[in-house]
Every structure is written in C-alpha cells, then in structure tokens.
Image 1: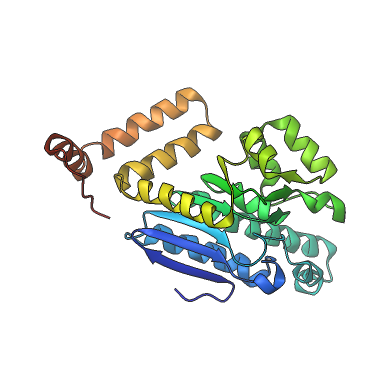
Image 2: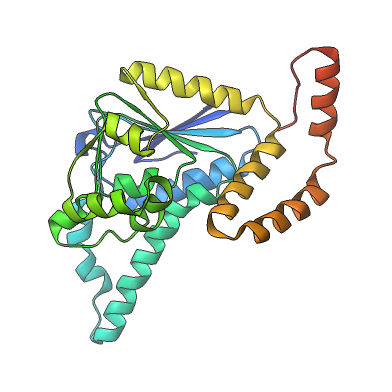
Length: 270
C-alpha cells in the first residue's frame, strides 16, 4: 500500500511500519491517524505478514498529536446545536481511539521499537503494541496534562495494565519525563538497547523468531492474552478451550511435530 505519512515495507514475513513525518517530529496529523489504521488492517489481512515492527523516522519516535489538527477541530465539528457539536467531538475521539485499537485488533504481533522522545499520543500508540523496546536515548511523557487536557485515546486505560496504577497516576498527573532505564524497570519496555541501530537489529531478530513460529498459534496466543487481560480467569479458560477445540488440529501442529522428529526447521503456511 502507498501512504503519505507512513512508510510500510514487507520482507521475510516482517512488516515494518514507520511513522514518516520527521520534519514534524512525527506529530500525528489527521491523515496519519487514518493511515495507521489502514496500515494495520493491511498487516492483518496480508498472509505473508506474520509480525509487524513499528518505528519512527527522524530524531524522535513521536511527538504526539499534531496541535494544528487539534486547533482545526472546531470548524470540523461546529453545529448550531451545542449538543450536536459535542456529539461530533465525541465521535472524533472514538474514531481516534479506534485507530489505535487497530494494533490490538491486528491478529499479528506488533513490536514497537522506540528511539528518542515518545510523547502524548505516542504513548497512546505504543501501549497498543504487543511489546515495546527502546534505545538508551528514549524517553516517555504523558504531556496532555501540560496542555490542560486528559489523555483520551488509550494511555489511561492501557498503561495501568502494563506498569500498575500508582506509576500511571504519577506520570499522568505530573507529565514528567520517564527515561529508558526507568521505563524498563517499571515494565513499560521489555528491553533497552544501547543505540538506535542496536534497537532495530535486536527487534528485527525477535520479530524474525516470531515469524518462524506457527502463524496460527501466534495469532491464537495474541488473542488469548489480550482476552485474558480484560476478562476473568474462568472466562479466559473457557475461551481457550473453545479456540483449541476449533484450531488445534491444524497443518501447523502436524508440521511442527514432523519437523521435531526429523530435527529440521518447520515450514509453515502463511
């Protein structure tokens, strides 16, 4: 697919999605919000893509929502009826939330490789990824509080599940900067790499390892983990029983067992 605000490539079963507005610090303008959803719908629908890596071009990962987009919302939603104006704003917010949820809806794992600053809407974005990795120069800040608003597209809902309620409250209330080492300590990122080059190489290695596994099993694992996050243990056990009753007896299972017996690498269908 061709994009304006993103650069998307696919090689060796790994789709790389790059935020590509480096001259604007990868600020998320109206078009980028739409293209992010389109990109991850494409990853989900493309059999050859087994895993996705999310990156940012330029000096930093993402500076958050484009302020010009925010200032332009007024004319977009204006109506003579105050209630309808507010309903229109609610629909804009819900649509932005849906854009980021597209990373979770994507059946393929999404690995975020973060360098430099990740600010505001960038936090909303990466909390939707399956895993997060960063370079030593990375930093994270929930900056909405400093422009007089409450973060509204996912950070306050997803971040407590990752780092706990207390640290989420501190970061959201203060807007302070969290550096790479603290991000690792609190569980926001899985690993810190020395440099941007090491980050990309390391995340690509992890992505390649995932791409070599059974695609059907990876998709099932993602769905089960996400489901369990939001449901009880009993509900989640019931769901996995139903899933495996339907999906377990697959060609992937037969190939994995045959490859193990023959001491060779398995070859799975997309």
